Image (cartoon, rainbow, N blue to C red; front, top):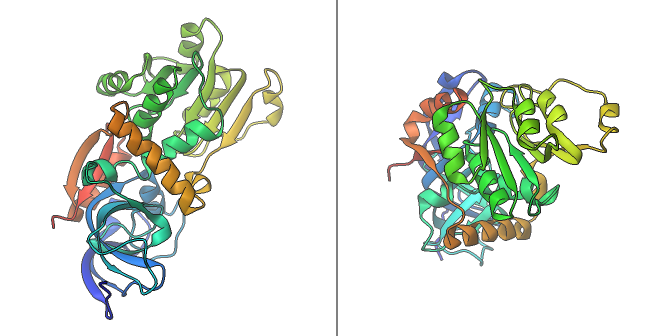
Length: 332
């Protein structure tokens, strides 16, 4: 057993005040020894997500100063006194634990995912947040049945590409929205049957045209303000709209009465509600790993940058030019 009895200094990123990407500052962090129910993870790869941007800007407030980041992969270096399920040297990933933009972090065991040898650190860093988010959204509200029409917004983003693959795997007809030809190509490669460039076409009109007026049985929307009004026109009778983010800003308020005609529903989805226990987290992660092994599920890596370039990673993501996942490497 390896335990630490004193703090360990590591390089990391700190947000001292809310603002733009430039507030991401490189600093030395002093990590405490892991306590009961905790392990020290030395990071290999770190995932970058929109929630990191929301928190940096103050849209999803957390007390400052803080180290951003909610997921990483790496190796267990030390364990707390009572930890028995993990040992030093174990390969792990973790999700939904604040502080991953650093060379290492102290993480509760309930956030850890054992990482098989045949899954690379790069593959694993791309799925704990986005893959598990996609798994939750596709299963918990209206799991697609063969022949269902599923509309995925931002279909070339990290979550979007995963959603496209899940929906296609379950036999749905998948329509994606994107903002460029390169993103359209990526969405089609992931399995989308049709792709709409929303900068050139009214996506709601196109969905109705493509489906002969039927609309989408399930719409999954992480964009918000720019898309939600169209969702209400594009959703089918008895259809479901699931909102899980607001990349373009919060959606405009609407009267619930407009849902009565057509018996439609709108739901909010937060992956934190789908991994409330370690067992739920492991069950979703296991499904994803099985999909990767089977070959029908894959992560697309847009860029891997050094940890010190975290600000540039945020600029890439905020500019909405990315296709797939951005990773930060510790360089160890």
